[in-house]
Every structure is written in C-alpha cells, then in structure tokens.
Image (tube, rainbow over all chains, first blue to last red):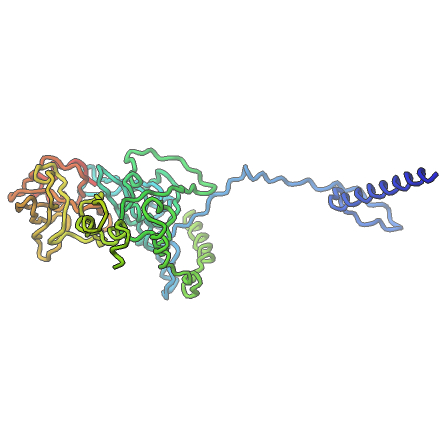
Amino acid sequence: MAACTNRLDKFILSMRLLRNQQLQNERFLSTSVCRPAPEKDSDPPKFTPPPKPVIIDKSKTIILRKFLSPEFIPPRQRTDPFKFYLERKDMILRRKVLKIPEFYVGSILAVNMADPNASGKTNRFVGICIQRGGKGLGATFILRNVINNQGVEMCYEQYSPLIQSVEVLKLEKRLDDNLMYLRDAMPEYSTVDPNMKPETFSTSGEVPVNKIKVRMRPKPWLKRWERPKFNIQGIRFDLRLTPQQMEGAQKRAEPWREYDMMKEYDTSVLEEQIFSEVQSEMSK
Amino acid sequence: MCFLSADPELVVMTFPHLSRSLTGLIAGSAPVFHHRAFSVTAVAAAIQKMTRVRVVDNSSLGNTPHHRPPRVIHVYTKNGVGKVGDTVLLAIKGQKKKALIVGHKMPGDRMTPRFDSNNVVLIENNGNPTGTRIKVPIPTHLRKLEGDYSKVLAIACSFV
C-alpha cells in the first residue's frame, strides 16, 4: 500500500517536472505568434498567417570597399575650409582625366610618365610604394625598386600633368604606414620585377595585409628603427639586436603622447563628408 | 672604465667608425670583420669635397680594389656642391681623375630618381668616358647634356 502511494507520488512529481520543463521551453522558444487573449463577447480573430521571413543572403550582395585617398583629408590648420574645398574641386577635375587607383603603402605600382628626354617620350617605373606624403594637389608617393643591384627611388606627384598612367600591379597593405626602413633592409625586399603582370584584386572585402617581417642589414641604419617613435612592426629586430638594446630603445618611449589632447584630430566626420562629396562629384 | 668591460660588439656598434681600429685593442677579442669597409653617415647630401663615391663604369681604374675608396677632391661648380650632371675631380689609387656625377643619395626634384649610392662615371679631360659600359641605371634628365657627354650616355645600358 505504502509502496504504491510512493510510486504514485513519484509519478505525479515527474509529471509536474515534465510539465514545468515543457512550460519553460515554451516560454523561451515561442514559435507561435503572441495573440492577445480573445475578448469574451467578440468572435475569435481571423487566422493571419505569419509574415514571410525576408532572407538577406550576405554572400550574394557585394558591398564596394569605401576608400578615400589620404590626400583629400585636410590637415588640422587655421585655414578656411573653403580653400580645401577649392583644392578638392581641382583634384577631382584631374582625377576625371587620369585614373588614380586605390593603393596603399606596400602596394606595387607601375607609373608611366611623359619624359621629353626618354626614348619613346614615356618613362615607365615599377616599384613598391614606401611612403605617401603631402595633402591636396601636392600629394606624392615614393616608389622604390632595385635595378641592376642599384636601389632607386622615384618620388611622384600624384596630380602632376606629366603622369600618363598609374597602375596597381599588386594591391596590399603592410604592417607599417611608412616603409622607409626598406633602405636599410636586405635588397631582396625592395626588388620588384619590372615586367610583372598585374594581379587581379577584389573591389570588395578587406585589403590583404602582408605580415612580412623584413631582415635588415647590419647596423648602422639610416634611422634607429628600433625606437618606439617609429613604431615599426615589420622588422625582425631579434636577428640584429640584443634584448638589452631593445630595452635601451624602449627608454625613449613617450607613453604620455597618446593621451595628449592637443594632438587629437578626429577625422571621422570630416572623412564621411568628404567621401560623399567626392563620390557625387566623380559620378557626375 | 665601463668601456673596457663592455661587450666589444656593443662598443663597435655604437662607434661604427672605430670598427676597424678598436677591434684589435679590446682585450681578448678576435678582430671583427664587418660587412661594410667603411661607416656610412646618416645624412644624405649631394656630392662635395671628401665624399666617397662609387664608380659605376667598367673601367679598370674604377673597379680594381684599393685600400682607400675614391674620394672627391674638387667640384667644378660655383658652390662646392655637385648634383647630377656636374663634373668632379676624384682621387683614385693615388691619381687624380675627372668624373661625372650620375646619381646621388640626396633627394632632388620630384620625378627625378634618387639612388642609394653616390654614383660617378670616370671621364677624360675631353669628356670621353674611360670605361666602355655603365650597367647601373642613369637618370634620363642627363640627356640634355647631349653635346658634352653624349658618349657617356651612349655607353649607358638602362635609363630610369
């Protein structure tokens, strides 16, 4: 008799637990549309089927990469923004004639320049971009290559009328914004084949970052690249410097500089405006 | 005092121009032979008196090794600074020789190449080159020296 009631109790308990489980599950995943309780006197509401879910297939939609050339962003100065607006207009006029592609420091470019002294009147130079400097119409980029064991660098003005075409043979970024340390690196890192074929790259998605760490020539270097002022990520310091030297270089670190409010220059809003302006002007 | 106990490698690295002289003096260290025969200054400047230059043609005078690198002893310009296309007087292997500058480390005008070494081509007094070929690329704006140094341009292999 006692055993019977025991078992019954257990059964009731388990049923209660199951029901609770069920209720709990239903509470978290309610697949049914929440309907208000029907009013006592009205008819039960008409069955409305749930709206069809809109499936956005992200893999099919192509979002073009937003790129604003760095020379469009004006420096922080006490000049009238109108001056930069006029300069941008001139830059866009030139860009309509000469297509200046999207490129970064570390990409391999080929530039055809009009040269009265060269045979065939055009001069072609292929090299890796080591620096992009200047703002506005005076924007420059430096290409470096090693030809016949001689390192050569050419500084081109982007908006110069002498330039006939700029092609990107390989689009990629590097770990640093400035590759001037390639002058002190082994020559194989600066050598670019002048007859290189252009590689295709996608216009959407992230730009590939080349995480190469370059080997350097023995010291002395042109600059003390190990110092934190240059903040270089792309050199293999462990091959040329002892840990004591690295520590000694860290003595020159100025960790308070990142908190300097006077040096803050937030360009995000300005970039958006200028980007939309440039886009609309270029499409006209 | 601290220098005597310091690591010879470190001392040599901080004083690169002593790399050849001090190595024997530091007690207990074997002579360290460095990759470069001389130290290179950080400042890139155009060519002036006492600059060490690199002879880029295939003349025997320019290519035979000597214990001293060729140095400029006079620059034939109004100021003593030599740029691409200027003549200089070199001291090579104990003799004086004229040369033409074909590239320097100092950045010049935009659209002109900047070389990683100060390049020079040996020349006779009448402007004829001593060597027969220049393998290193030459800047194209040298072509305006068509009259004087046309023979130098003729022996050049590649232009930049």
